[in-house]
Length: 86
Image (cartoon, rainbow, N blue to C red):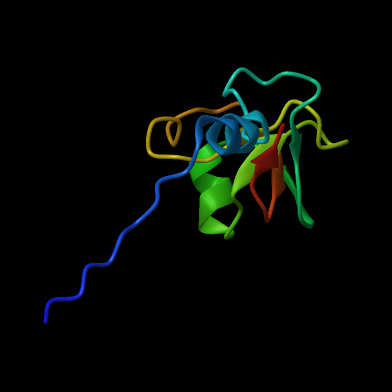
């Protein structure tokens, strides 16, 4: 006898709720980096090398997650240990 397992997909409301918590990548003041501040850092790569995951203003506003597309940027500002939340 065969057993059939069904996988349910997320509904649209759950997906849009999740997306609402992610940052836009536009350095908006309402998007903040979380975690411990690692200090001032010019480059995104230098922040990543310190195990940082997000760059922002010192007060954590204007957060931008570190990813492969922005590793060459030189406007990190302040480095944080956790990702951005919008």
